[in-house]
Length: 233
Ligand SMILES: *Cc1c(COP(=O)(O)O)cnc(C)c1O
Image 1 (cartoon, helix red, strand yellow):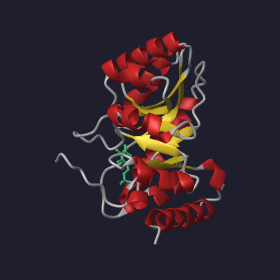
Image 2 (cartoon, rainbow, N blue to C red):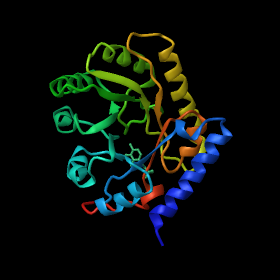
Image 3 (cartoon, protein in one colour):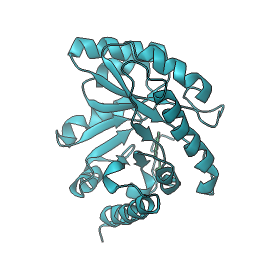
């Protein structure tokens, strides 16, 4: 009867099994409900099932849904962010997953300072070096983290990746493993103000493998809300 509730229960069971397989704890993994294209009424069904962390890939959608969803939810921006739009969401989001340039980080720093807040961010890594994807290359990540570490109103919490679309999730294990190693290696440099603990990786098709390799946030859309419908495409 209640499809969203059933879907969440199924995803929860699979998360639980994956954390047990890898000797981790359930509370170490956040299930981020990716609500892009989903209308407020249906998002509220997920919130009623205790899923209060919501991921959107467009600034406009966060602004459209922000008031209607109220203060009990935490918004995460998971899609590409243009510098000219930072000002609209700087005081609305808990975590920006998609920072991939110093220029963007500087704009976030400036807007955060104006609002008197610290902006929590992740660095988006294009781990498989795909032409079509945003994100820094793995080999350029440490340098970007170092540059951003000097910004006073930005805190780098960790790394994020959108892994390739694959039929068999095992094919992405190598990339998730590389992300984990990258995080460990950068932390080992002991940079000032850098202690990264967040790894945002894994989606509907591959979140279990991502958890086994150390994900602390999995971003699940289709698995919760069903197939997305894009009215304008
Ligand atoms: C849409 C999206 C997701 C969720 O994808 P599903 O396959 O529907 O789970 C996760 N991360 C990002 C960055 C997205 O844009």
